[in-house]
Image (cartoon, rainbow, N blue to C red):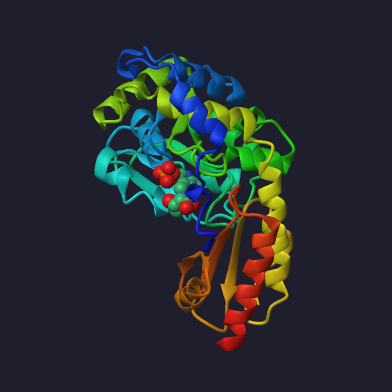
Length: 342
Ligand code: TLP
């Protein structure tokens, strides 16, 4: 059996999710008539402290529907330079929205209010008007780093001062909430709109939600339809999402403990560099000095451990509900063996 640490997206639905899916009451969601989708959207809005929420196919669709709803072509969006919207969405902001992304270097994924303020455009016909500020929490490429509440609050206060909306890519907002020991709605309170995923650590097979003001969600619903994301009897998906929100949030702490355990073991190995104290959630990114990242990933794959290279010398391990502490111990033994033979 392979130990699969490529992503928390590889998690499979729980038996309870499967049961809920097969028993789901459904209707045509393009007419707003799927009771299970409606229940999921209400639950999501409630958990995030927003007026309304909308189910979308994926985190990428959630972020892009959000950008399309907030921005006009020719406007600019301030993002952190390693964020998913900039790095992993296949240029969608420009391809679909005609939006220009202004990427700023973050510290562990976070931007400061001063940095963002300096990037807001002046009212000048030469410049693209700033339309939106984006943050990502937890931050994927920063190793699952959590942006502290105070840092989120100060950027949000700045956005409000400038009359700009703030969109949070909270694909893993519940990991951030568990790590900070706060309710997800306290994090969401630092953003105008939020995207979060059911299909990562929470274990649902498909789906993300965007949440925000009621009139904004109404406009987002039209963008979702334009993109072909209007689903019909989507209650079969939503049913698993409800189980995810009701039963899978608190156990994320286990994934965080496994990630820290893994990080401590990896830090002790020659040829790898990382600070285990910097591992706050379920993502472990480390530097490999003895082998290139792709070579190490391949050596691990041959030994039964799957992970991903982030760039030439960094590798990512992601923990999730479908791996155990025993798998962590096996994974460490595999890494040790691969490095010994290199
Ligand atoms: N991240 C995936 C890959 O796309 C890199 C992963 O394996 O981590 N925001 C963040 C912060 C994400 O990490 C992801 C997925 C998304 C958005 C997009 O979600 P999906 O994959 O549902 O489009």
